[in-house]
Length: 298
Image 1 (cartoon, rainbow, N blue to C red):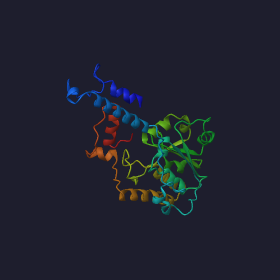
Image 2: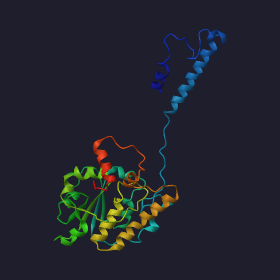
Image 3: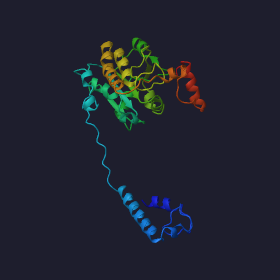
Image 4: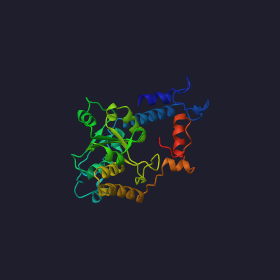
């Protein structure tokens, strides 16, 4: 390409004889029998460069994606449908997953497995970072209902199990944000709609079984695990949790058998002096690390 040619020629000293290389010493041209053969070599080299540049203009064929299963969205060769319920689980709760766009392209995402276990009219996935009444009237209406909950931890969040015991209106809908913790925080605080429903959190002693991805703390759960625990509480049916976790367990087991490694939480790595990266210099990030080491919720 032309910019590459300029880059190659711009470093040649001014006044160098045509056909002379950088390593040539004065008089070397005569020792080699004159400049004609060198000039011919230079022409050949330039022709080779031009032909190489032409390769960049050839059309690039897009990489073919492996055929995916229409139900679990996994490649057909590693389909997880045998670990899904034969029929979608019967639930009365409506589940809305608000998914950060970056999660949609991840290979080992859990939301497709979750959706495959539930009726289509009970589980809806909304992809985006910003939501408003104009952009998503359906989600706006859901957020304004008194029987809608949003699952997001924090000082103002009520324990889900305790809340449903005292609530005059039994919840019919729950919203869960899908993304990394920083992405979920961005979505929750920069969308005023999500502060309209009652904010709840899970108080559970179980550790995440999603061991092939690193979690901030030992208490952090994947989106599928959060939904499994929340739905089992709302539906008062522990079988729901067991059923939803089964494909996740199979996914992790398969990955570990084929080279994946167990990912310990940042909390565990910090406490045991195993964290592989240097501590951040940014005070805010350093404070988060210190909170993780002291097992303080952030």
